[in-house]
Structure formats: C-alpha cells, structure tokens
Length: 142
Image (cartoon, rainbow, N blue to C red; front, side, top):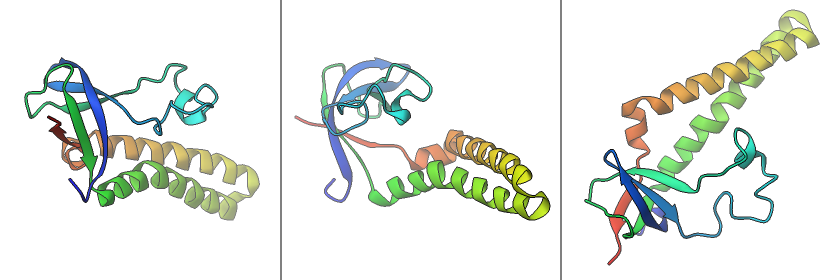
C-alpha cells in the first residue's frame, strides 16, 4: 500500500456486512481545537461521528487493527466530484442569470445551480458503480 494515501484505525463493530472503523489519526475532521465551530463538521449535525464504514471483505472482527488506503488519484477525483461540481454549476448558472436578467436573476440562478450540482454529485456518489470506485482498501495489521 505504499502508493496509497493511508491511515490506521480500529474496527469498532461489524453490522450488515460492513466494518465500522475509528481512525487513529489526530489530523482528521473533528479532531482539531475548532471542531465544535467547524462548518464542515457541524453543517448538518452537532455530533461528528468519527467512524468510517467499509465493506468487510477480509472477515474483520471488532478490535482488529487495520490500515485503510485510497489511491491519490481517486481521492482527487472524489474531491472534484463532491466539491467542484456544485461550485462549477453555481458559477455557470449565476453567469447565465446575470446575462439573462441582472443581479437578482443571477443570485436565484446561482442558488439553483448549487442545488442542482449538489443533487447530481449525491446521485453520482450513491450509484453502486461510482461508489465502488471510491471504496477504501482495507488490510489487517498483525
């Protein structure tokens, strides 16, 4: 796994064919001193769940130490899909709105563009074929 971006974790529990992991890194989301004020951590919820859900391919058990990894190019592609697609659609529709009807129409169209971009990204990630491309590689640490 040397060419992967990786992190170590512990299997907390197994449910419905998935292993739920808690990562050991202190650098991840919810670990910094501003975790209670962070917009990405608290946008939808005041509770940050630090567990990752991965397909239990290797007969993992609760308490197993694991290393999870993802190729850097997949991480970049996922970031572009989830973050850049909504922003791109916001700016494109805002520009079209500005051209068609001025500032008010631009603001409305920009909001519609953001919503459409978020929905498209969510649907793309929820499809099994796309989601499978972003699965984490998991190996047990002895």
